[in-house]
Image (cartoon, rainbow, N blue to C red):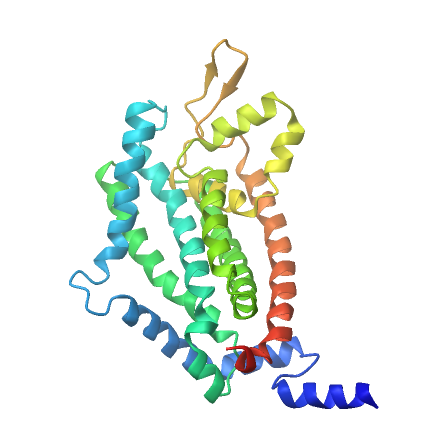
Amino acid sequence: MAATTEQRLDEVRTSEEVRPSARRRLKELYEHRQILMNLIRKEVRVKYTSSKLGAIWSMLNPLLYLAVFTLVFAVVLNSNIHPYAVYLLSGLLAWNLFSGSLSLGVRSVVDNANLVKKVYMPREVLPLASLGASMVDFGLQLLVLVVFMLALRHVVVGWNLLLLPLAFIVLLVLTAAFSLWVAALNVRYRDTQHLLNLALLAWFWFTPIVYSSGGLQARLQHHGDWLWLLYLSNPLAAVIFGFQRALFGNVGPCGPVPPNTYKQCVLVQASVGWEAMLLGCVLVGGLVLLYVFWRKFFSLSGDFAEEL
């Protein structure tokens, strides 16, 4: 009897189905697409409210990173990456979309508490709107990269370019999955947003954005292939490899490392087919994560109104 009463209370308290149908939910999200677009516009507008430079700030972000890391890695440490600007921006482009979306997404439900309490909608649109707003910044920062590529006459042609759409799709899937996860957790555990900042900081340096991905591969394989395979468990690494191969393009120059014990290249020393296969594996894993984290978000979303 007590269990029946508890179940009824849960049904009243939770405004969502206990076991949602994925197909029905996707249809519902599509029907609420206008709300999603309005939320994206709101996120972009709020970000630049009372700002004199507006969207230019999004373009200044990678330029500041470029100035700092060029001084450290290209000048002080004398890396063999040329042109370093294109290499850095190609990886930074993907990373900023991922980290920016998670940083907005983790607070997406909390910051829209009034909307959650008063309006019925698929609550997934809140973290997804953060992803949409970050894609606006992605487009602006892509323009910065294109300008540098034209100015430096760095043109990439061939099969490498096929990795770009695949890497972008994988990036979107991973970003959506983690955004749903951290958004749901942050409603119940407000420390999530602070832990996320630390996690993103560590994740940035564990991902070969500012240093040579080929050099990292050589060093890890020099100490054992298992280290390299372990490193590939970082899903963002495969995405960054894809962006770098598509936009930077040149695997070389490759050269020996004193005392001539092993050779390292600028980019990962592998074929385009191997990188495509790696991205395909990460895509499958990302889709699994997206489903798992979506179910987790869904299971918690019925309690959002009570916990906000």
